[in-house]
Image 1 (spheres, rainbow, N blue to C red):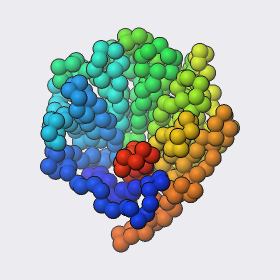
Image 2 (cartoon, rainbow, N blue to C red; image 1 turned 120 degrees about the horizontal axis):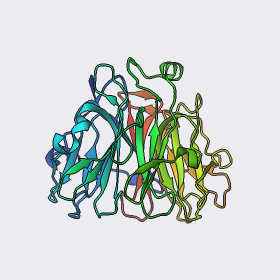
Image 3 (cartoon, rainbow, N blue to C red; image 1 turned 60 degrees about the vertical axis):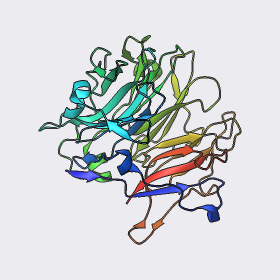
Length: 370
């Protein structure tokens, strides 16, 4: 096994003058008590993190998956430091599984954020597929495993990321899980186009409807989620401003299997329709992550999709028209990295929009490795 660390990060700052770029952030991980490392097993990928206020004290806490290492739940102490309170008492089965992604939502509307932790497989000898793990927040600093009780125990493939969104407007968050392989990745020693697309089958993603805070039911058949792909992430947003949540899915190896999908929600019908082709969002790429915001304040959502090459910025053209590729026009089209350590194409993973300089427009952070 080896340790996985992020080695290179890049800022792409929309509307931010180059001459104004200077050192703005200070590394404080050590003094803050953040010392977690993700452990890679079977040549798989790095994991995910989730920011949530799990104890409702007004301070944001952090859950980070560990892969083949234990996960962490960093409690914000309110003084610039964090304490890891992740224990087998609350999260026993995460210690037996290769954990991958994590997301939070109040699934039973009791006022506390609950957690879904996605898994690739068990950490046993044959690396058999494991269920994704659902944890109910008890409101007292502990969590209870409700995976089986809520109907998720028997759904076992190699899962990547999870997202919550209320697709049927009943007031309860529903659950989407992006899946990668349809079976265990046992025996794989290197991840590349040949070993993945020739040896392993892509998986159909999961969509679970929340039954009024009592459990989840498989809703793929109802909603028409029948594609298979090497799913990396899915996000719920309202791209067409019709008042319901649509689903944008980023797929790895989209040129070999399913490309990226934009599933339009046909609410009140229980149905999604893929509009990616019509919207010029059907990129067949090594999509890793999706960031979104209304970058130009026109009232319509725009999207940035990371790639194992040049990533793509798609601007919303409104009213169902094809999105406009603004990647190079906005200065975020990084095609080559050149420095003293590495020269080659960018390898981009997660991304996020935020206003780091408080000038009211959105800036873009991209995590990269080399």
